[in-house]
Image 1 (tube, one colour):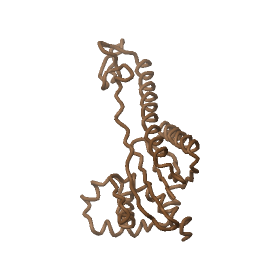
Image 2: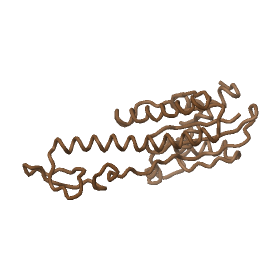
Image 3: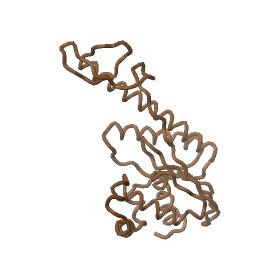
Image 4: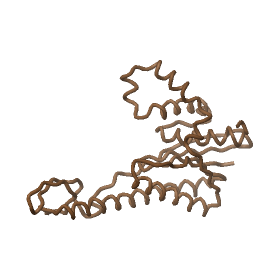
Length: 226
């Protein structure tokens, strides 16, 4: 049995691939999907926002066309919306192609996904819904069923509090402050200890989030240890 697990995001998507025979894991690999940075020049603007005056003399920071020296507030807001929409389409296109490539080449029997809740604002949530829709479309075309799991459900079988307690005891406050998400990091170390023997090596915390979805499915459904 071949399986793919995804942790969806608008910045880095974690992916885990696993091959099993019955309950026995044969091998596991992971990778991140990291979209390239969007360049506003794709939309015809200068690469970075510039400070410019409105016709009334007020200063604004806006996306500008080459040689442009003034802009209205309404036009600035219109361009902000355009760049955000163009950026989302750019990210969606790249992510969709990478997802399609993985699913087509691996041809999994099952796809697991960490179910998205609300993210940093409605626009990000809408983008991730589109990413999920793209994944479902590719999965449907390949014939692979998709199962979603909420993050709180996935983490129920991981001793997160114990892991955090041990981690905080062994690290200084300065070391802890350097880590963007300590909970994700301790889960990563926990899963690396469990599954490293099968060849998985995480480059990002997002890959370990994808592995956490696999871990939940494997323990509660494949092995039945509910």
